[in-house]
Image 1 (cartoon, rainbow, N blue to C red):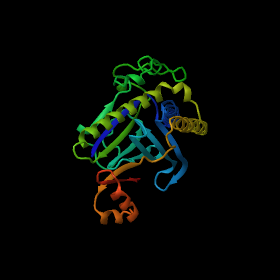
Image 2 (image 1 turned 120 degrees about the vertical axis):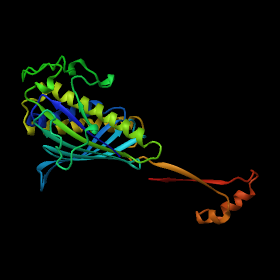
Image 3 (image 1 turned 135 degrees about the vertical axis):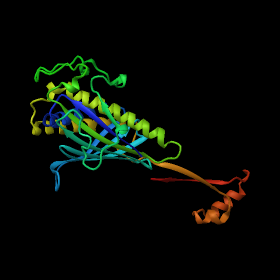
Image 4 (image 1 turned 120 degrees about the horizontal axis):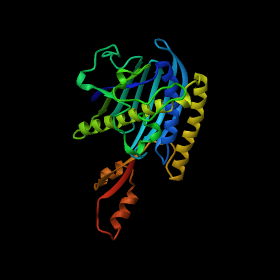
Length: 296
């Protein structure tokens, strides 16, 4: 298992980000869901937690890279300022857990989760201004060195902004990734963490860059927007699956084959005597019989 803690600061307050995050996730998911890849929201319900109070419980079916390679089920409990997400792939021996805390500071809390500090070598500050993102995700309108908010009179960000910006908040993300396959574990876990870093950078940049779209919205308004975009996103994912002939939200199947030659084994597997006789009387050379089975 590879564990890292990411700290992403933004020129927002935690209360503002509660709205901005919901808006950003909905819009980003809709934009990125196409061609059979993307996310389908299967649960998004209000819940009251005994410890954290009122919040939201979500369940998302995600097709990452391509549906045949990685089909994931992400479950989340969102009680600001705490989020807990668990992502489990239908691939065996693979899982991701993301614990999140939001605080109105610049990332200075070294034990934000309250159990034990994350080792310094496992802590990474992600800079939404200067850290590189994949070229395909770059948009000039989301470049925070060029960004300016008319509604809040904030921006653009400049070098050293994290020590000067007011307001400022930090999104603390503790990510543990496990891929227990000998020979592939280290490289795969590092690759997954790099992918998560890119997702975190793009998402938090967009939450800030889109501030004039969501600032001033109430929680009820952004929830209405979220439901509208979820329906649109689910429709896009399902329609793209139908157009490519993929089953909708189905679990991938894996096939295996075995070869048997002795009569006793064949009978145990349900092959009748008639089949054996027909096989023996065939003019074709005798070869092992190959039977195919599928497992979920």
